Image 1 (cartoon, helix red, strand yellow):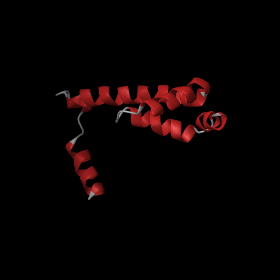
Image 2 (cartoon, rainbow, N blue to C red):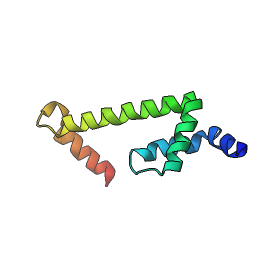
Image 3 (cartoon, rainbow, N blue to C red):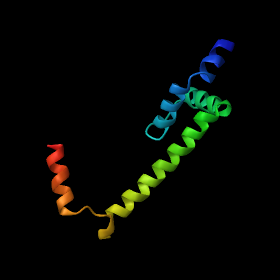
Length: 88
């Protein structure tokens, strides 16, 4: 049991992956518990989760503004052409 807890607490890579997955898919109870336990003791991962949520919210807000008819958030035709050339 102690080895299991040590593995959870010392694995920031898994915790960050689970926190990113949490926004996309439903985690199992075991995965949520492991993530919660890790974040409880790891300030770096706690900050990562907090910052990721802020970034996600900002992207959603920016996308919402870009979808509006406000031309301030629309790309110019020249920029669109340039990006299409780069992509293709």
